[in-house]
Image 1 (cartoon, rainbow, N blue to C red):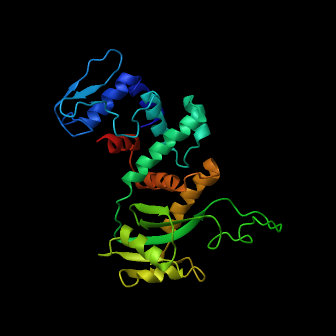
Image 2: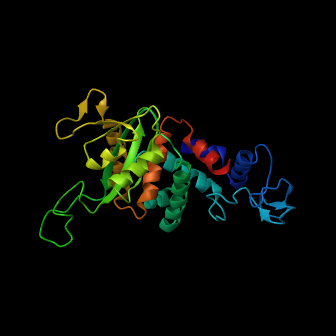
Image 3: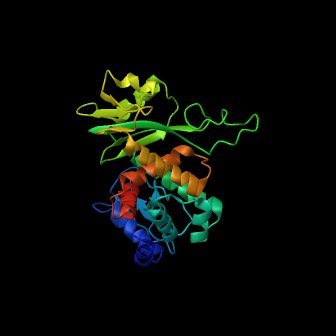
Length: 291
């Protein structure tokens, strides 16, 4: 769904609330606090969409317990922000979102933070299977030219051994990707990530020759492509995960230039990749938030 469609379909607060109630209370209205269905719509002057729970005696609305809870920002702007973010292949900076929606930059950043956190929560339980490529990368600025400063990035190194943020990932060919900031790229840390992300039954794990991946050999069928010699040998390659890294880094180079909370930006890139064939990613995101 594009911005014009969102703008015309949800022109005001009432239309947005009606849509969210249809998504969240599709089968039965209930209290988000206690789960009771003994609820009734509240007539409260200008306060639209309020409900009362007769069991826990609380008052709530359709936003309770969601990414938009207690917001004072018009819901149409939330809808437009979600539409902009899910459709922006290279992501979107908070100053740009602020200009587009007539918001302050801190407000736009807070909205993006909540949206990214929601994306992260929905992609945390993915299990890959089949031909799976695993790799790690490093996110951050290009190293400075060497000029004997104390803050040089490890003498101009660009990959392993830099002070950039390490990110580890795995992608199922033709399927989904899992990626996260890596606290530990030792054999133990790599094995923990692979066990959490890849189903060993019927899977072939393909990696480069980085020695930490040797830890997976006991649990997984493992093929290695030696990048010092070649980048592909038939179907043995890591080109798919390399392609995903390029998307992640294009967002850094083109839009953000700095990540204050790298895990959330990685989660955004994961969510977009996993919904790349979804013609209504906007609707999918809302259903994930409210269904």
